[in-house]
Length: 111
Figure (tube, rainbow, N blue to C red):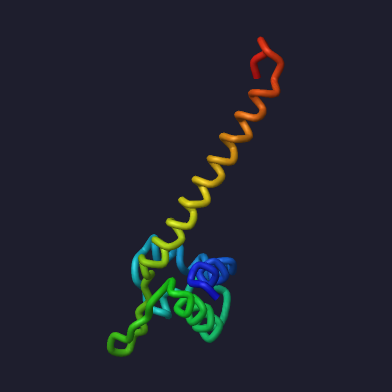
C-alpha cells in the first residue's frame, strides 16, 4: 500500500480524522487528553492511534509517564501535493469541456 493510500485509508474513519484535526488545531496531546472527549475505550483509542502512526500521520513518544502524540507535517504535505495535482487535472478537464461547449453554442447566442 502506498503512503498516500495508507494516509487516506486512515483518515476515512471519522474518529481518526477527528483525532488528527484536534492535533492540528490544538498541538500535541497526551493519549489521555485525546481519549477524554471520545465515547470509546482507551484501548480503542490506542488502536486508532496505531493506525494513524502506521500511516505516518502521527508520531508518539514517551515523556516520563506520559504518551505524547503529535501530527507529522510530512504526511499533510503529501496530501496537499496530491490534492494540488488533482485540482490541476480537474481544472484542465473543465477548461476543455467549456471550450467544447462554447464551440457548440449557436453563433450570436451567449451562455
